[in-house]
Length: 385
Image (cartoon, rainbow, N blue to C red; front, side, top):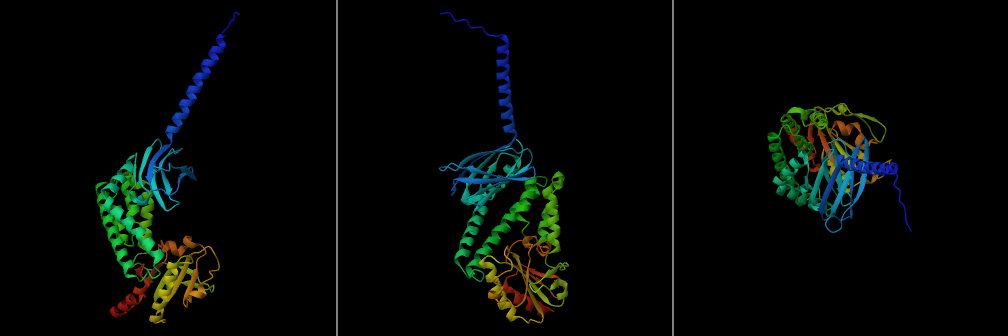
């Protein structure tokens, strides 16, 4: 049987165009993928077979779950990022996190140990490379700090008397020394690299939770060039001004509070008295231990010349139900705005429990003062007067 195959030229042309268009489409998709950000990682000691990745995209918070190889902690993630973006990787059910700085077209690498997240190496662009170089130079200090922090957290879970514990005090002193050493190394890096965005990040990491505003001011003055016009630089400058307004020696700002009796309190009305503001939470044994310790100080001091105010700022349940069991005999305020309360922002309170002592002249005398130090601080000031 003879089979005659006739090939229509127009059909050949259409088929050719289809193939070409298909190839172009494939090329376009490939190029589109390249325009995003690819993150490849290998992280040891992951307790979960996945990690969570989040970033802001077009004013929307994107959250993705990424499956991780069980044996070596390997993963690959691609995100449609077309501008400079901060990407956060959450490990071990949010117990650790890693911050990655990404931009369009980046191919980034993340390698390290989940139990030592502070020294995980992130490479692939200028910012991450410079920050990783800083980490590697100070790996020993960062490793000691993270191990000490983990030990302190475990200690807090086991020791019910941790606020007065000698061991706890010793470990906190060690932690403070490590933080000062790291801050010194960070300042040296900033001095050598005053125009780098990575220097701003180190300022944010090592100087924004410092109660000495002059330190933050000093390192910010080291910065030069276009980096000062970035959003992070402006935010750090604003934060520095806020810290100055609430620093030791600064006059107490105008703040009004509503206590649980629905009475309005103006902090300036207590001029002539020592005033202690104690910020606590309704959740957590630390705040309850703080209140018990404050009761001893309150009893030891002359009530006519000392005003205590406890401010609950971390509560989702109203009314607060265990105030009576704590037997608080002084003024109590429950801020329904929580961490968004005006008093929290104006006095730069970043964690609880946290105490601020105001002198009779209306200036801030001490920040983050322990309950055991309140009596001594007031009596020594009275002696000087």
